[in-house]
Image 1 (cartoon, rainbow, N blue to C red):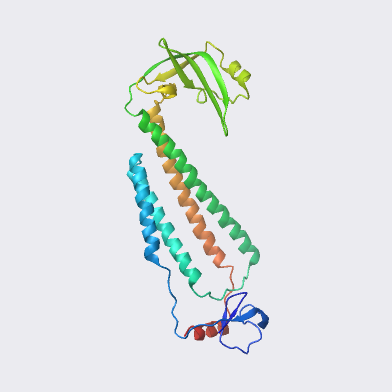
Image 2 (image 1 turned 90 degrees about the horizontal axis):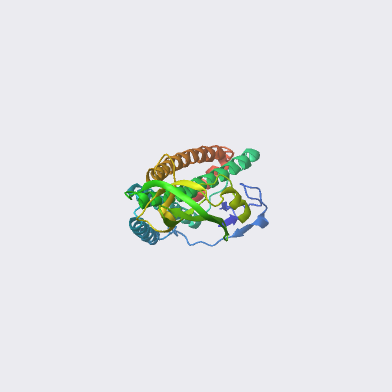
Length: 285
């Protein structure tokens, strides 16, 4: 047996000077020894699926501990199954003998479609990642404020603080609420981002009155939330549901575009010569 190094086509005729598939010279063909009747050995699928079962167990335990919704467990379980199936298929193809590659009939369209597939893949991953982050943050805040007693009052600012962190800026204030000292985050209250302490003091001078929701049974800055027409629990619940709806819609659109683009890219390959197909069929038999 001889196999072309460039395209992987296996030649039965050892006297051939060029590869009938890609036209490479005989110098690009190297002998490959195989045992007669040797069968292709598939990857050890049980090991792969055992790993998937372990991932699913850890994921389920994590989501149950942090009170994730059950439909999210189903979604991520499905993603684990799909990822494991694709991984098993990729390993099986890697171990299988390489089939002869068809020549490109439209190389420009092939490059454009490949670029589109790459962009759709990035957008799909972004929907999955950022959608999950937005959802889980609002989901946790919803359960944090759900059922907590609160009342509307005023926060009298006594001092503001501009604190730089490694990757962000923390803006908060101390003040008086119903005769007690409280702390609150100023980021939901401000519509612009100050550049330093002086600008923050100009935007929120001492004595500023801010209408808030006060949650007496919570601690720290969680006790004080800037007032809005929708209470915090309901607002976070709406945001979590919107993140799921928009995220799943975006994933569906990206998946449909990927399916269409992959189908169009396959049409960029030319049909193989019938004589070559007959040679490959005889080689397989």
